[in-house]
Length: 291
Image (cartoon, rainbow, N blue to C red; front, side, top):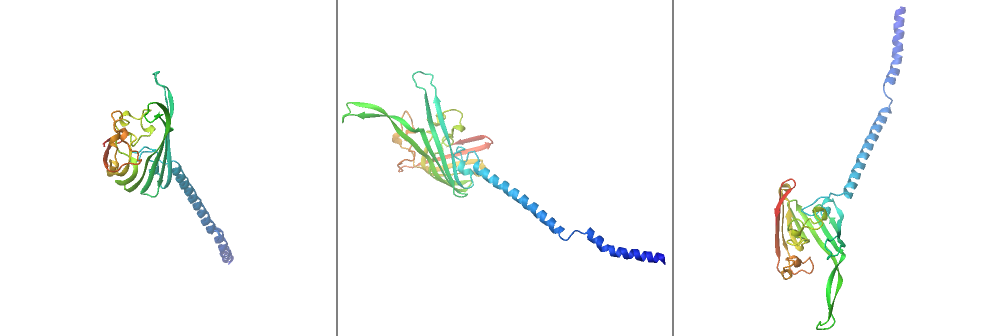
């Protein structure tokens, strides 16, 4: 009988202690909520960190756009093509010192060129690109003969400074597709290599190559329309266009066709000129072309 009483007493104690043990083992009612809030706070912190990194990348991309050629242009002139939208600035300068071996020539220093590029990307397919050039610190020396009478029996020669500030190019480029684009305005004539890519960091000598300064009158620009593109995933690059052309009356035996450049200033547009250029890139680092 005593054994049965002891068993009954033990069973009663276990029955009374059961709920207390279960309460001790199970988490408090607010603990799952606390864990959920902690997890959400951690996730929000991670999202904020990712967002901050993306914003920093966007700022960095705006501040340091790509420095590479686009469509045959120099790297600095191509800046507007490498921004997502908005304004783009660039430029370069050339300051030269000439030390002649001959005593006949005088050594000289010259701010030969100071270039400003300004472009604006309106959207994914419309780009404005322009270049303003200052040569010889904005002035060039020339000789002028002044007559003291109508017959010019007595005359004197003096040097004068004429401003040399040019709009090198200013055009709108409509990028309908990578293989079909239309550019309209004052633009570089696609002849040779240096005429398009004439920035001083793109050739090895101090001066531009003689072949593309004398035979091809770099820098040569004209008003007109160019259709251009890079089909076959950049394997080919073509340019065809209609331009206002040169003034043949300005050709000479000394400067050949260089004097015929109109430079986009009050150009006679009665006889149009046509141009075509094709470049092929069969291997990386190799370009073969003609114009």
